[in-house]
Amino acid sequence: MKIDWAALGSVFGVSLVVTVALVGVFTLGVVGLSLRERATARGGSAALAATGAYVCFAACAAAVAYGIHLIVA
Image (cartoon, rainbow, N blue to C red; front, side, top):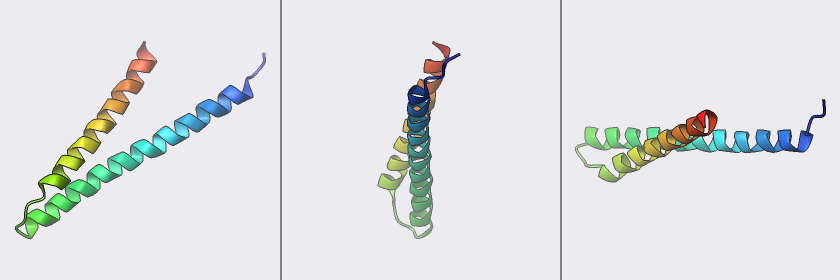
């Protein structure tokens, strides 16, 4: 059995980058919701923060759905 170390390293690198990016986008969504809560508590409006948060969560959901599609197909 021969292991293709270059391919294994490539898969590891791509997986690491995608995981860090996905966690970062999810974190931005949580921060956006936090900003919305702060603005609401102060009596203001933070529609942009809420919209950005929902876009971040939708991007996370799309990435997860694409990953599941790749695994199942």
